[in-house]
Length: 436
Image (cartoon, rainbow, N blue to C red; front, side, top):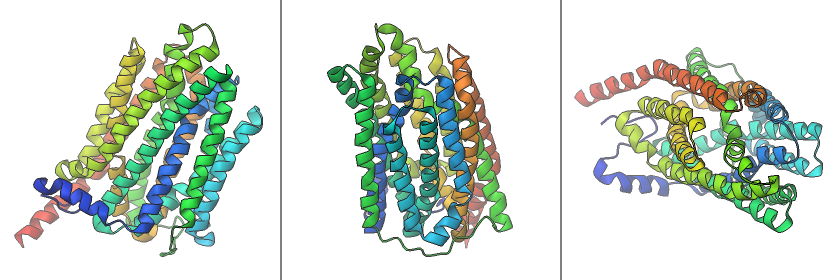
């Protein structure tokens, strides 16, 4: 059996033993970093689920929501260009502190006043914080993880973050719904729920304080070796198409379910939201929980079928279920399609991260993350910014789902073309080694 990069060869009869054995080797610093993303997942899950719904409830149009999200995405994109330099100059831990603080500040700004300019500023601040954290965190975690169990570190980190987001998502639905029943005002309910999300997000800074983050290898800017530049460019291109598709649909799912299946069923806005939020958040939570556990077994499927084939196959299959969602005649049917689609699309994400990390020089890990995240966010910002118009002009919601499907398929095909030969070469090398 072929051993994939960053993985140990584990026989089927010892699958569980090998899995838990790998997880038991995590250092205390790795565990703290994983706990950090668990807490961030709760707060982030709450905010992500509530944000577009909250913005609609205070009177913003689809176009306004697209502007707010798209401009924030542009801020994220531009910040990715300087993240390696910031991490080098101020240290990885300080960069993480700054990123988490800006994320908290972004949510606090939402609580000040309902104003389009303020919400755009909030989105910009949050976007900068996200860009500082993303590649820096991945690099810190990668440097702390032993190469032999690196794929398990990323899988468990994804599992923990997703469990946190599952908890946050259901809280983001049930809490404002309950407060709406009590107060009769969904806007007040969302406001207090965001306050709780802010408090939960401060735990990220607490966990980071107790984590020993070594600066280790000095990170360079974007002057990469030719081999890595070509490879990372390919990762960037595939991420770009995923980002283009995602911006048209992913941020809009809570609004899509609520508007399509609930608003016309109830006499007033508050009642519709109070009844929709728990059900919509439950569907999303179920998908997150199942997806969380799928992350734990993803390394074994990657070992059996190959990382590239697993990534491409699962993503292509997910597109079918994504495309069918707007045709669903009832919420339960649409929710089931959403669950299947989300699991298939995200199942292999930690495998993709580990695959890229194993393919680049250690000194270029932050740069690889910055460039690929830059590509994803640049594309996502463009599609998110324009998606408000797309949703407004498509009352049946078919057009954004069709555009997303096309871009996802393009990304998957290119990923296979770009990277399948890497695995084939590894297989040949492994066979040669066995003969020796």
